[in-house]
Image 1 (cartoon, rainbow, N blue to C red):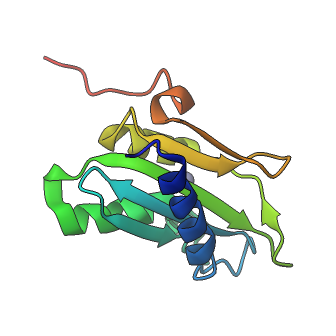
Image 2 (image 1 turned 135 degrees about the vertical axis):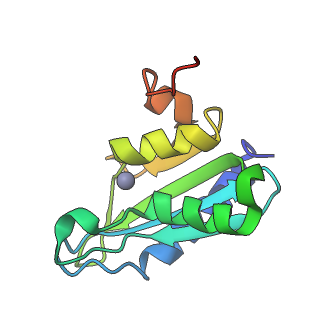
Length: 140
Ligand SMILES: [Zn+2]
């Protein structure tokens, strides 16, 4: 289901759509993320900046927060797509930042992560491939 090209295409489209809602008056970089949980539900998020830059939030983690609010601790990430736009409306290649990669693997290391490459094509890789040496809480 999650690696189905049509399912990923739908997430790509939703990520592009939700990027329009971003609040990005400082960077002018509008980012949207659309994820599908293993239950099949789609959740979206966009970046929300703040004058105090460090408290701004990324689109990916906004989408994860929406999914957790809806599904609770049972939430598992199946796939996510991320899209970004410049102030002039042109789409830009982007990948999840390091903090978001850590958040993605928390909920689905095997999840597909889709993003635009510099040539404009979508690339879908596993969350695990994006952060192979991630932090894991040590077992005691
Ligand atoms: Zn991020």
